[in-house]
Figure 1 (spheres, rainbow, N blue to C red):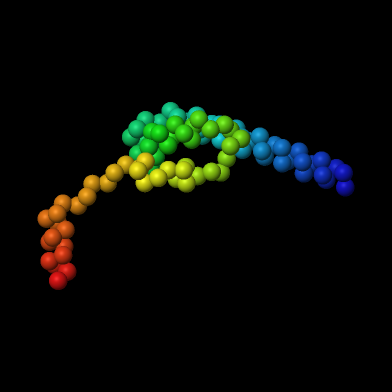
Figure 2: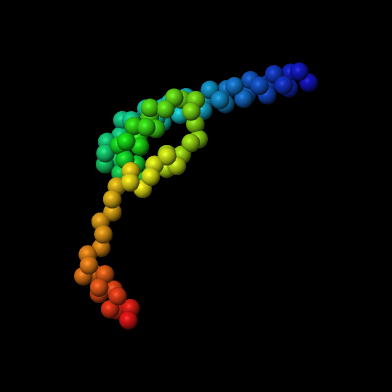
Amino acid sequence: MQLDWAIYIARRVVDLISLWCARARERRLLSELDDHSLRDIGLTRSMARWESSRLFWQGEERVSRDWTIADHPKRKAAPKRRLARAKESAN
């Protein structure tokens, strides 16, 4: 019985350490990405900087929860002519 608990605890410790190593590696790699690569994955430079500055034991919080719409890149509005044509064709 005691051996089962020892094995269980040892496995949990190994799993936790490997998780921490993976987080540290991913955050280091994230900090090395250029702006083009960050745009490809839907992050801004400030979002990547925030995530990569976190410590390895800080996990599972999602970046998007802490960012408002003002922090995301602005989308271009559709030209008024195209909107007017779409309204005309709908009528």
